[in-house]
Image 1 (cartoon, rainbow, N blue to C red):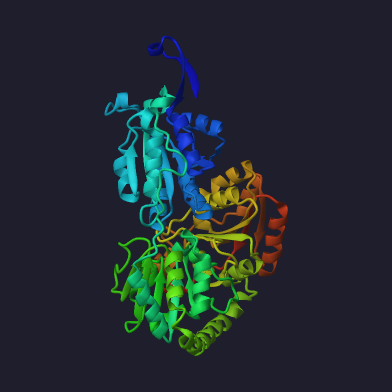
Image 2 (cartoon, rainbow, N blue to C red; image 1 turned 180 degrees about the vertical axis):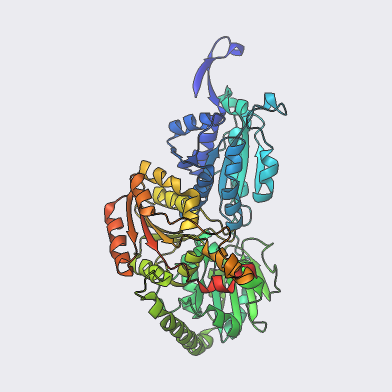
Length: 568
């Protein structure tokens, strides 16, 4: 803010404020303490405002990384993330990150620059119809029309991020709007905590009663705890639900880690069996999309209940017996309470069902264990993800960024705490890993961060390893290196034959450990499976951003890759 002479008041001094400083005040009111950005002339007044408001500015090497980091920040903190990019190519570079947040239901705000309103439709530098481009992949997209309205519309964008299931918003701010100064009393600056209502809904009470009755009569129930369990911070309610009602639980997406490994209600490898044989299946915060076979993988004779924040998701692609729109934690807590007085006999009877599932789980684990302990060279990917799983602590945030190698990890790696699993989500975006690691470590410096990359995924955004070094954000990076885009390679071989299997999917044999050293971090090359754990330990002890480049067998594919389930 600046004091300037106001001629309309006989030369008295009046406080003025610029558009960029109004942006910073609105971010501060929302609780945002960092922005991710790549500089441009259209947006620098926002930086000046952030300095005054005590908001950290982390500048990255590509706008896609800025947008992914804002997404990652939202997932880790529960607060909306914010990325700030310049106009034109700056904004288009960020589209992938916004689209990923949209499919993953992650609340974030992307602010893009724009040419001056005074140059509208004149062909100003980097002028593009940003709002038109962003509208299909955001919950709200708008142009800020005047400096007085800057903070007001920023708060409006945040409000829309939380309408129904969370998601991203986009604002473009023309340069003359951002740079102009207006009298402080003329600018609307919403007060923190006074411009958004609670969006937590318990769900229809009659539907809760129906669910309680279904639980009372089910002999073989199971529940899938999806990403919205973490979005709603519903961990405690979910744990209380499965324990009080003796319901086996499966977890996916950000819901992984809701129950710790070894918990009697934690199941992972028997999900297909459970979905085929259960008489009641409760799906929480997960759409019937490709990951669920569009609902076709659920028993046709089971009663299916779907709980979701978004009414448009409930019953989409598959008929259901009961749909409840509401906050996962409130719905599960209410259902457990409603069922508490009528379920004692059912809880006891479910011991046989739990034992049946545990036997299936144990058999699947023992069948795969020899590969997880394999001493083969090149390294079996199962051995790599096994070593990573054994290495994780309760304070390790695990991030998966890749195709085939991350498909392996989804079967083996089990985070030990809630909110400690991050993956792209249903858009399947490669290149999120560096940005997610950046956001996770910046937001939670008390946590260890480990990211497993495919070598193809790392190549997309790997230069921001230097950003991690520059901002002293140590993390443990592991690259499962097969010099290929192996998930696609398998499909090409199956469809066109081995003689055409390596068209457009083969990468160079890159020593990424040396790349890490070049940029000031810690790096190693690993070809012997016995050296994986020691290398991970040395990376942890280094206190630096690190890359452990593990050379895995390019001729070994994950079962999900061989089934090509993502395309069916």
